[in-house]
Image (spheres, rainbow, N blue to C red):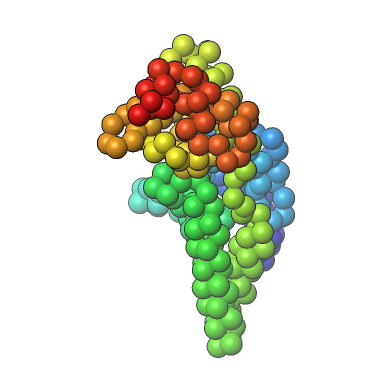
Length: 284
């Protein structure tokens, strides 16, 4: 992306350094918020095509963290745009400041497009995770990213056909399209790693918010764990006939899943625990 922006702006060494600096500020903002939420950064690259942060995928399971981390980059760019605008109001204006503002507008605008791997796509994914669950969010993110790519490429082709210059839109659309192959449904192992993270936080802080989830007795454990992704510790209240008959912790659900297999339900958990609830249920 960086080379494309530079190409359209006329490409001197000074402009390259300014664009690289704007991009670095964008990525530093991401790094700060990632550190605040205590996620691990595996790799940071500043390439001719833009910035690339490789972050522990666990952050995708926390919609609040993912949204704030994604939004922090464009926020920095638009803060710079506002800062330059304020300087212009004070009468401070020159070509370098104007270019600096333009680069931040371009980076901020591009990254708000609601498509992977851009920050707008991450923000959309966070909203979908909160309202639809992690698995459904992956599917919808892929669909909406594809729609965004098609719209951008179509607009680019239309402008090119009218000799109005649409190469930029075409390239951004192709960039999004190429990254569609990297959007996959989360594996169950990711949820297991999330539980280990919760246990580490609980061991360090000594407390953790609890989230109660109502489930049916015949609900598969894997579905309950996958559809209730949260940084809160989960407690499942199992009900039958409108009455809660059993309570299962997140860790107990995982233990049953690993012992009884992929198709295990909360009924297997009740049997495994051999509680009074199971005895009463069996008698009935």
